[in-house]
Each structure stands twice: as C-alpha cells, then as structure tokens.
Length: 494
Image (cartoon, rainbow, N blue to C red; front, top):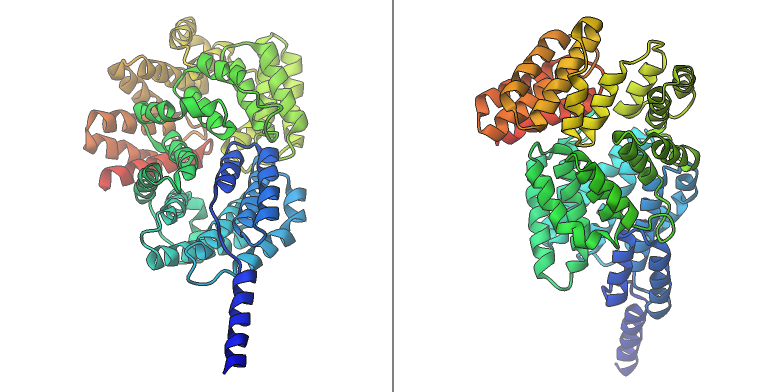
C-alpha cells in the first residue's frame, strides 16, 4: 500500500511539474501591450524572460504566434509566411496539450486559426482559409458554451460575426462550404460587451486596446455617422502616441472625417520608423495625406518609400497611380502617361483601388485637372477650396463621363458642407447620368443618399436607396460600396 501511494504521488507530482499551463502575469500583460503597439522587439524580450521563469506557460507561445501573424499581415511577406508554417503547427500542437478543462485551450486555438485564416484568405488560399475560419468558429463557439462567463470569447466571436457579415456577395460561395453565420450588428454587440468587461476586470484590462481597435475599424468602414468615428477617436487619442496600431486607426479616422491636417500632425508626433515593426502602409497613407493637400513633392516622396520598401502586392498599383497624379498636377503629362503605363507591371488586382488603377493604366486620355483637384481637396476636408475649384469648371467643356463626375463631386461637397437638399439633387442627377456606367459615381451616390436619409430618420427612403445601390451594376469599388449598402439594409431591418 505504501509503495502504491508513493507511486501515485510520484506520478501526480510528475504531471504537475510537466503540465502545460497558462499564466497571465504582469510580464505577459506588458508583452501583449507591446505586441498590440507593434513594438515587437520589446515584446520578445519579455517573452524570453517569461520562457526562462515559467517554461511551461503556453501563453508565451500564443504571444509569439501573435507577433508572427502581425508581421505577415503588415508586411504581406508570403516568403516569411511560408517559412513559419511548421512553427504555427508546433504552436497548435503544444496548446492542444492543455487540459480540456482549461478555458484558454479552445480560445487560443480558435484565435490562432482565425488569424491564419485571414492571412490565407489574403493570399488567396481560399480553401485553406475557409477551413481554418470554420475551425475557429467551432472552437470559439464551443468555448463560449463551456465557459459562458469567460468574456474574451466575445472578442473572437465578435470579430468572426463581423467578418462573416461583411463577406461580399461574390465570395458567398466560400461560406456556403461551411455552415457558419453571423451579422455585423451581432458582432458589434459582442465587442461592446467585451470592452465593458475588460474595463471593469483588472485581470483582463490589457485586452481593451485590441477591442477598441476592432470597434474603431468597424465603425470606420461601415458607419455613415461621423460622430461614431469621432467618439472612437476620443477614446484612443491619449493612447495612440505610444501605440502604432491605434495611431494607424486614429489617422484613418481623421482622414475619413476630412481632418487631413490633423492626420499629418499625428504622423509627425509618432516615431513610426524606428521604435516599431516596419509598417510601410503608413507611408502610403502619409503620401495620400500630402496629395490631398496638393503637396506634391512630399506626397511623391512618401509614396515612393512605400513602393520601394513594401514586400506585399496590395495598394502597389494605386500608389503608382497617385505618383502619376503628382506628375500630372505638376503639368508633366508625358511623365503621367509613362507612370500610369507602369501600373500594369506591378502588384495585383485583389483590391478595388488596385483594380481601378489597372483600368486607368490603359486609358491614354488626360484626366480633367480641376475635377482631380476637387476630388483630392474634398477627400482632405478642404471643402471650400474644392467648391471654388468646382465652380471654375464649365460643363460645356466636359464629356459625358466628366459631366457625371462633375455632378458627383458637387454632390459630395454640398453633402460635406451640410447642404443636404442640394446634395440630394446632385446625387440624383449623378444616378440618372451614371447608372449603367462602370464607374462608381452612380453607385456611391445611391449609397450616400441612403446615408443621408438614414441619419435623418427616413427609413423608407434610406432603404430605397440602399436597395438601389445593391442592385446597380458597376465595376469600380463594387464590393466596398455594395457591401456598405448591404450593411445599411441590415441596420435598418434589425
């Protein structure tokens, strides 16, 4: 009996000593904060320390995986992605060693599958991506049922439901391969709940920045109400100076809200070149900010930095188009034509902006300079300058497509200056002239009319124009514009 008891004690002790565990201590929380700030070198130092002090803490493997995921996502470096495939498999194998009673097991696995699903979908590995998305959905859903008070589940479920809810119609076949469902409104509620819980729970408040980022990107992309984006901005401004991911969100919000000069000021406040992982898409955004101010020299310089350093393929064509616009606005049409011809040989056409750049590369006609200036100034929030440029244009000098764009630009400027009645008339003119054309002017006019009526509380007219937008046949920015109309319909029907 003594020998038996001794044997049992030895076995139990061995299990305890070698058992894999999850320990959330201050060191790991700080590492998590560094990762979400894109300070990967600082995070790795803390991860190395944790490995020495707590070698069985599987949280460090999860954190290490998070760094790899963000590196691939930000750089779009497919070579690096392929090189760490075995490392990802090993991380999954180790986490599978956690006991089924651990609330972190399926949570970690679900998040890892979700992360790499998004990467595979970006690299057009659709079947692999949808299989991983399905695994993530199943694991997190099961974990939410097994541990209903473990609120981090809601973060993952929120992201999953939003992702599923915004899938364009042309990619619905992917979701048909598996039975996963979700809506944006459902995901937003889950994220809001998770944020409330993280703010009131000291053990998990390190997750709040991540949730704020997700919420901000959703409002930025889908909400027609600028006040919602401004509200998110007010929540992150103090944190953004030491967090590149939140700075990126803040800059996007400022750019969308027409606060171009404030976006440029934020660029000057953050040292995004040296203290963080290289995030060259920031140079693309900075170049766009300068272009919107018609600061052509600085715009071209920033866009060239992006073009020459970014290892991915997205936005490359669009960046080249914007570089060509700098030449055009400087009066050099020959250089403009040469630079747009170069668009055909770089990047891919996965994104709407790159598709449009590719189409323009085959058009040897010279764009109307004043229409281009009005567009750029409007995008930067310089509405009165844009209006003065529009007023210089004589319709009799324009072709049919330019007339359509003229009414569209006039509508957007009137909308921004809160002259909604004039904006409505101009949007309707644009729809009349542009319906059936491949350009986005008519489709986006229907979307914007839906936005105006939704904010005014006129649900009937809002739905009418959202439905019109979703039924219209155009090519430019099709997925983005029709996706927003689809979300508008869902918002108003819920």
